[in-house]
Image (tube, rainbow, N blue to C red):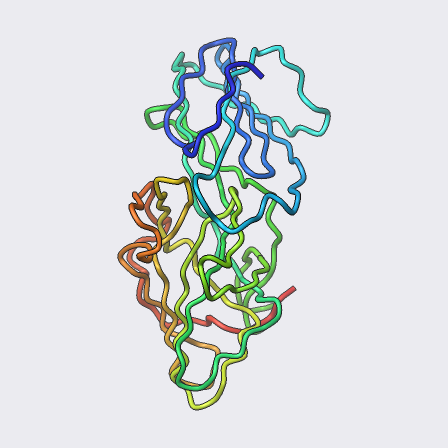
Length: 274
């Protein structure tokens, strides 16, 4: 790798001259984007994450960004995509974004929220990267890690495909694991029912959320609140106007995929999980 550098900000606009490539190392993702004649070429491969990559957060999150020659060999495991263009632009815009489906979180172990109690827990959604030829030519959206898929609904005939994620459901921010390839959400669960809520599955509709970044490189969404007033699996969703106070100095990087659905009643808990 030539001219590699470590940074807390891997998103933005990058010059990729013809015959050269840029590389990103974000968590388990090794990404390389080459600019060739009438073509953008994107290769990606996965590197394993060791236990030391998750630690209580302090300081800046470090990413590697570098420049390679176009003839630098690829690993055999790399997945390569090619995008043809008649233009000659050499500016690539890379943006973090949330998944294109809701994420179903599975707390391990499950959490029992007592009657008439409120709890706040932190969950981390998988990261997607949006690639564009600046200023406005869309190339692709790529998950940092291939997502696990699941089904959410009362039966196999009623529901929708979603992505699945496991979580410890930490109640304190300082106890949450730090991953470069995930986006953190503060979730407030208000159980106003007269019986406990067994929180085995939690549906977070990430298409309604935006992505923010703090100066130290951590990615956040707005705060989310679920208000449950009866014994069933439904709750009222409220999306806050900003990330929680813990995300001090956060700046908005991208808006929600689905605007205008920030307050709604939907099936938030339980349901079929495969």
